[in-house]
Length: 61
Image (cartoon, rainbow, N blue to C red):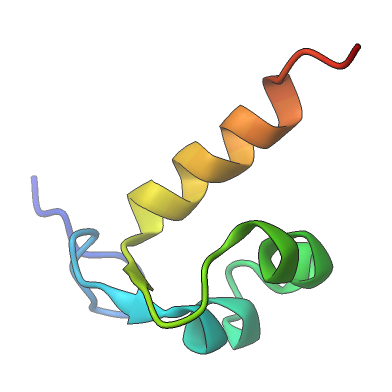
C-alpha cells in the first residue's frame, strides 16, 4: 500500500507552518495550529497529527 495521500503527496513530505495552516486537511484547526506550530520549521502530516493528538489528550491542571 502506498503512503500517498489523496493530494498525491507523501505522508513524509514536509511543509512550512503557513502551508499546513492554509491546507484543506487542517482547515478546521487553523487557530490551534497557529499557536502550537513553530515558525520557520517544516512538518509532515504525521507530525502535525501527533502534535494535535498530544494537545487534545494532555493533562490540564
